[in-house]
Image (cartoon, rainbow, N blue to C red; front, top):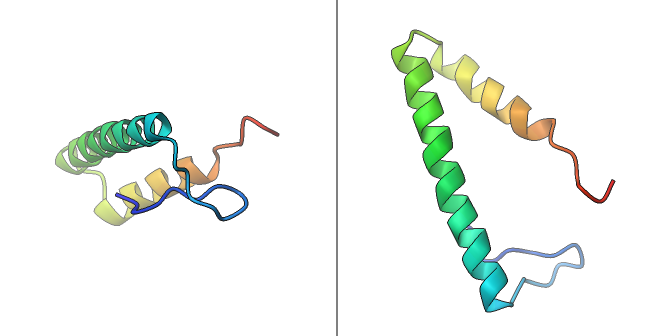
Amino acid sequence: MPVIWPQPDGEPVSCREKLVVLRENYVELHDVMRDAFEDAILMGVDEAQMRRILIELVGRMRSPHA
């Protein structure tokens, strides 16, 4: 888990409520990604390829500010 959550200006997020949400989202995302990764491996998907697929998924995400 990140030690700090940097804002665009480089300053860390300091609002406690925001930090709680960020931590909860991180844990939830980790769990979902781990489950999807493990399921894929158990179903015969190449581990390296599954890692690339997950990385590509993140790379295709767009900012809601765009």
